[in-house]
Amino acid sequence: MTGITAARGTELRCKGWRQEALLRMLENVLENGENQKELTVYAALAKAARNWGSYHAIVDTLKNLEEEETLVIQSGKPIGIMRTHKYAPIVIMANCNMVGKWATSDQFYKFQEQGLIVWGGLTAAAWQYIGSQGVIQGTYEIFQSIARMHFDGQLAGRFVLTAGLGGMGGAQPLAGTMAGAAILCVEVSEARVDKRIEVGYLQRKTADLDEALSWIEEAVSRKESLSVGLIGNAAEVYPELIRRGVQPDIVTDQTSAHDLLYGYIPAGYTLEQAAEQRLANPARLQQDAGASIAREVEAMLAFQERGAIVFDNGNNIRTQAVQYGVENAFDIVVFTEGFLRPLFARAIGPFRWVALSGNVEDIRRIDEYILEFFRDNEIAVNWIKLANQYVPVEGLPARIGWFGHGDRTKLALAVNEMVARGELSGPVAFSRDHLDAGAMAHPNIMTENMKDGSDAIADWPLLNAMLNCSSMADLVAIHSGGGGYSGYMTSAGVTIVADGTEDAALRLKTTLDNDTGLGVLRYADAGYEESLDEIQQKGIRRIDT
Ligand code: NAD
Image (cartoon, rainbow, N blue to C red; front, side, top):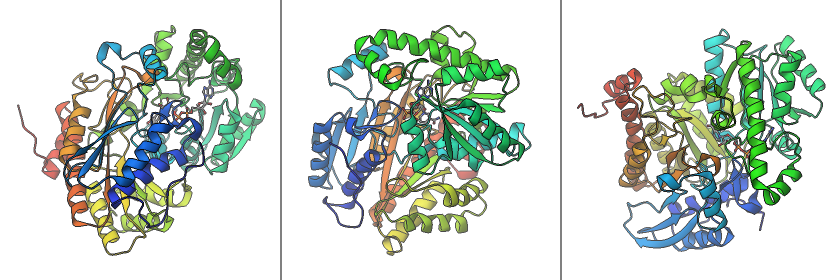
């Protein structure tokens, strides 16, 4: 079954906008996803629902669900309908949470084969994915931060090397050119390269390394921005660049290195050969993928040794490399600790909103509001201007915007009023990435090297989910890692619908204030100065012990 797109317009198929909104969000993740037939949204295996039977049952249930009812979903499968009340979430879900000692990739694959579990990524099974745009501002802010720290504030004339042009990695070329750099993206699948060109995230493609390098050199010398997709394998291209003495300024990777079976393609394999080996000899495929990752990470370390700024972009590549013999893989810094932590400590993170009517003008109208009423917010104003100019529409029109405590609420309430006044064509759904201040424990990515050593404590995302249910959010999800992320993380997601009603205003204010409030408290608890300052400035109620 293919061809699902999100409904547009203002006609309701459900008994209210809250249910309709969540249904459109579900359809939207599939519309934007990488492989709809498999229900796969991104990151190799992150799915929107357990299987097609579950998908259709979810759709039917949402269509018939009353406002005083809550749909319960377990790993992408609808389990039952509970009588609750109109301030309870419409949907609650727990996806891919395995008990501690069982939380291994082997066990995950077994459960998956038995049809008992599905990995939801962060935003796939929680129906919050908005296409590559979901990570684009994060990637852009990383580049900006590196520019400020190492390159006199600008990346014009700088060469960025990366890999992976999938659902999330596909944001890299556009983030790179928005930051002014010349960016080379190695991607093994030509179809993925073509998709990024088609949606306007990538400019050029070639399968010839010499040609790719000559384009990059020219752009660097002219200080022009450029994005090039090189069809090739990163485990071969990175070491080859080292051999040739080619030296990028910034190096990272966003292949699906977290998953050795379904994600990372080993050197020497075509996509078809990897698919065959997955069935014929999965252990061998994983061994080969691990060995290739080790080669790639060794090259990344060599680039670092030669002076490049090298970072892990959230795909567990260092963890895999250590397991395959690269003992010093953690000499490479992770992007959160290296570049974004001061923002997270103030709960400034990847907030986003989706125009449920499908009208892109709604997003532009909200952009205008931000430019007018958040003039002092440099990050937001700079980003909205750029996004308006460069970020293409994928699926339902949406916008990512890194806002923090208080600002998210201010924006959402203003949008709710615009909906009420009929200034927008329809309601707007607000959500955020799970990779947000109070919502994620991910010791090798989000919470690496926390000041107080609390990296692996998963109480925070669990508290976050409970708090968001208590705060009347419309959808609340608790996720843990699957595939190669099994046992490595727990996170929570939330969605709230601005349908223009007073109830929506209450839900938005309570949920958004508490969601970011907990984020600030989490970092304050770990001893971050920025959080203590935020608490003081914004009157967040912290208990001193
Ligand atoms: P995806 O599965 O959609 O895409 C991965 C891409 O990598 C595919 O196009 C694949 O063909 C390519 N690839 C695999 N092996 C390769 C190799 N050896 N050389 C070159 N290309 C290769 O995944 P995605 O959604 O783009 O996510 C990529 C990774 O980023 C995942 O590990 C994901 O968990 C992680 N991620 C990080 C963040 C973040 O905030 N930094 C956010 C989301 C996802």
